[in-house]
Length: 441
Image 1 (cartoon, rainbow, N blue to C red):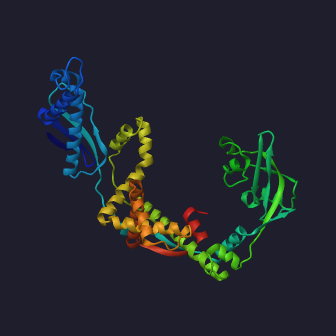
Image 2 (image 1 turned 120 degrees about the vertical axis):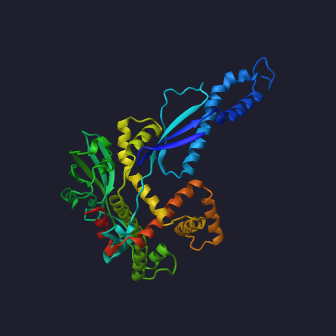
């Protein structure tokens, strides 16, 4: 068997595989011989069927299967031996003259080659690594939220700010009859929200739906209307008030602290705020790390330029999905996934260049930390090492879990590498300002 390669350009190549009869004939004969041993053909004893009959019945199918198996094996081995980095899979070129009656065969495959490029982490500039702190406002808001969560519900006669209002939305023309409970701060339109001030049980408030919420999709939840109707819905709905309640915040005392954290963990307001601050800033650090990872990713995508074998990849997408695509559909899919492919290549280059590897001990340690955190959420604060190790080994016996956890471990290694090698200014901000920096005003 002879395999040769013609490099069309830096990103495209054609591999030609020339297969002689001597390459595949021994295996074909062996398979047909096995067929003969087990064939049940009327008029012949088992194992005594003439080989000519076996070849007539099964010869071409076996030939095609064995040639294909040998072709895939040798092509894959060639790619490994030549250390070719390809994108997608080899695409067979159509040979109009292909005939199984021939003894020698020639196959051609198009290859899309991975581009050659370098990634310079030191070139990434003007990024900010945020340190998010829980300020006094956030802590006060969280304390109030906790007190309300454990507080006592009180019936009221008249609506005031912060009250919960229960009743029914109606509109006869649209067939709306939807029970709902809400506080008036759910409405984006403050003028409409103000209509509830001072209203009593039994009163009816008429609201305009256009611009009532910050997202029209919320009309689906409150009015129980279909998705096709909510966009730009401009009608009036009546809301009849059936109940007005407010929550009397719980007292900050030993009973509440024990409910929240267990006996002896928190004794006063300052200690409560410290616990809230620690927990919040731990969560904020995760979010800040994710933003930094995303920001570096975007900067690398923008600053690392290389060409791709785009026409090959479009053809590959067109032919290798679950269902064949049109050329237009393949182009749309390629445009949608191009950035993802580019970052996969960039990430692969970073991993290789910096020797990032995942060991089994890495996976065990990472999984162990996750398990301990999960057990702590259910009140198991001090599990034994043996218990944790047993759970870890069960988790790591699942290949899907290993794949998912490996991706998380590598993401963590990438983050640590970026923190080390990407120059970024550190900025301390409140959570409110961090959200603005992440998503805009």
